[in-house]
Image 1 (spheres, rainbow, N blue to C red):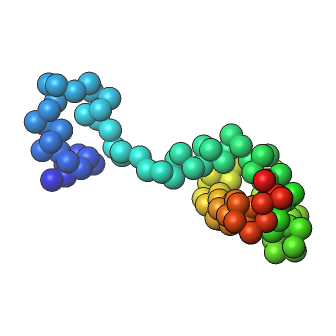
Image 2 (image 1 turned 30 degrees about the horizontal axis):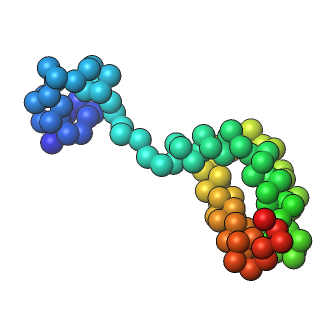
Length: 104
């Protein structure tokens, strides 16, 4: 099943003549993590404003200074803490839609 640091080696060998080398030589098929981290990197200022200017912040439920600092920080992708901020984004979005529509 595995050989030379690659998984699915039997399938790779079976289709080696049909697929480009970059597909055959892949070491990972990726995950949603890379998408989330890229999204956070591209939109971290907007995410920070969404949270710091939102309902949760207005009701003292989140630490605005900590979120602001985290969103300003380079290299957040190294420790995966963007996932924690996205959980807050989920809650903030839910509150804005279902609890307090004036925040839309």
